[in-house]
Image (cartoon, rainbow, N blue to C red; front, side, top):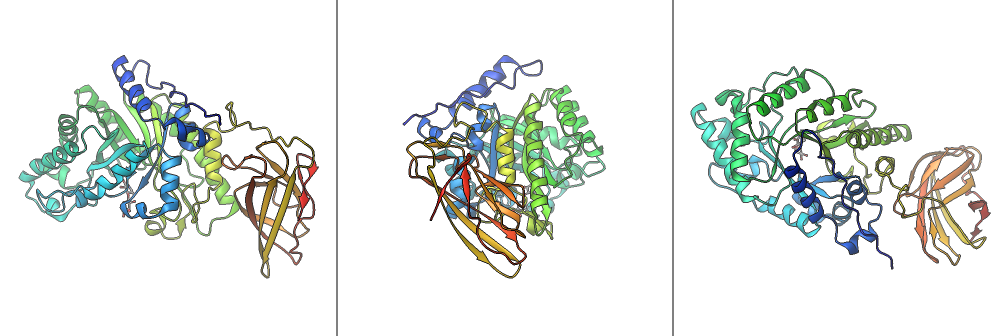
Amino acid sequence: MSVRTPRLPRPRHAGRAFGAAAFTAVAALAAATLLPTSQAGAAGTTLRSLAEAKGIYFGTAITQSDLNNSALTAIAGSQFGMLTPGNEMKWDTTEPSRGSFNFAPADRIVSFAQANSMRLRGHTLVWHNQLPSWVSGLPAAQVKAAMENHITTEATHYKGKLYAWDVVNEPFNEDGSFRADAFYNAMGSGFVADALRTARAADPNVKLYLNDYNIEGLNPKSDAMYNLVKSLKSQGVPLDGVGFQAHFIAGQLPSTFKANLQRFTALGVNVAITELDDRVQLPATTASLAQQASDYAGVVNTCLAVTGCVGITQWGVGDADSWIPGTFPGYGAATMYDANYRPKPAYTSSATALGAGTGPSPSPTPTAPGGASCKVTGAVNAWNTGLTEDLTLTNTGPSTINGWSLAFTLPAGQTVTGSWNASLTPTTGQIAATSLSYNGTLAPGASASFGFQATHTGNTSLPTVFSLNGTPCATA
Ligand code: XIL
């Protein structure tokens, strides 16, 4: 079996803002955390390996209970190279009462990441939310000591284990003023510098970040973050990056996203997309998921276009574990995987933006050597106005198929509204169903199953002729 050796990430940190020492450390860390060779071959087109080949990472967030979901953990551990605990490193979990620390939940997530050779993003040390009431109830004079002790204890516990820390999360209001939380009220804006210095003292090598939402485009809030970063850098406060949460609404990616990231990297900090999701109004439609796919590709392309954008983390693995439906009623379907952990169009568009299909392996060119070398079986499940169709394509030839595109004609009145495990275009008439990044390779005898959902006006029959690259397949 031929195993593809992963390429070293292309350095993206060289340049005037980043010294040689910093670059060496980043490259060494990236090299040390690449997939073991045996996994890399099997995972040749994962988001993780595609991102690493471009010199960035693709991460996800999971919570403790997610560890019991085998479909979720299988994807998290193979498709993603960076992991953020969704809740377990927050103050309410780690120091629920003063001086009494609990790292057990986060430690489980750290172990999962280590077992899967993933890097880790610590989230978060200082935040107004998920903050126990004992902190917000402290007399102002005691807040600084409590904050410093919290940072020192937690950052020391994870010293050497994390790639980055979101040291301060969400310090700003929408108008760019500081949020009047316990920390600001007690210490003024100086709490940010104090938190960063305290974190640096506890862990000299972890990347220190400030993180916020609605700062992706040019606006008063991102201006405030920009001015803060500029001021901190000019004072020599330790700060390595800014995290852009990127909780987007489909179709509303800011047009100034790239220009905004670039003004931050020009200050000498890295930037990262830390909590990406792209919510759509429920129920999701073919059109809204197509918009989402275009948004995801836009985020990937933006990060790739900005030197100093180190990676992208999606907030959650799939729609079933996403925080969106619980927080934004009427919205959901915000991730790259559907409620059953099947990849959505946003997965394909992200992989494509990361260069899937353009590398040396696997070949993007559909090939079916040996003439009629395929078989298609199918089943329909119809109701009054709708149907689902499950199709299985089998390679009956002697050679491996590297990427397939199966052509067939939909009976009149049928219109595709959704699909899984293949990309279907257009939605009526003569259709091409094309393999996705993960199911294009069919060894002799191997099968791929895919399907679609359609509306109909009475005719619920299956297509009669299927052809692979112009050659009809046998039907059972
Ligand atoms: C969210 C979690 O996903 C939820 O499980 C929790 O109930 C609330 O917090 N910005 C952040 C994240 O920085 O920590 C938040 O995570 C989402 C918004």
